[in-house]
Length: 184
Image (cartoon, rainbow, N blue to C red; front, top):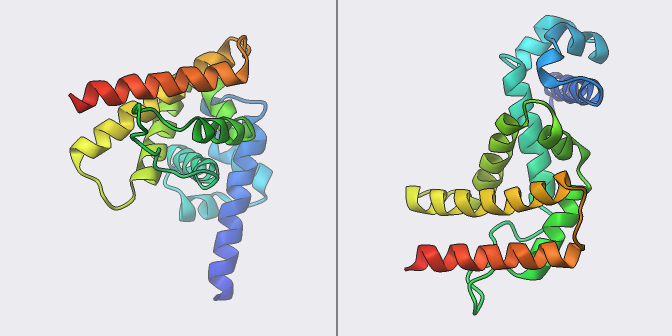
């Protein structure tokens, strides 16, 4: 790899890492390019060589973290099973990987979380669909991911009040109902 390209990738990684460090204590809208550059030890021109603005940086960080979660399980939910639901083992794996990703959890709990939830859902759909991207397939995948994601977030928001195996079953039943309503 060309040294210049390697340095560029290293700078980009340092910028992302600096944002995530700041994000642990600050809301995204309170973080400035100057804050990120100071934390990363780079100048503003280096930031702007990689990102046009902080939103683009956030979108890339979200995509990176969704990719980490999605690579850990079969990204295309196996539908349909006999009953039309997502396999419980896939739901269990998804929960494990999502709960192990502090960046995604933080994006889901920050003050402007609705905006970031949408980015996470879109990233999951785009990652799982790959090159086949018909509008019908996209929206089916979007609604399925949005529903599963909403169940997980509600469970987390309420402090995980029900056992994990029950939330897995709820998600399985949701996916079953969703599949059956779309299949009609």
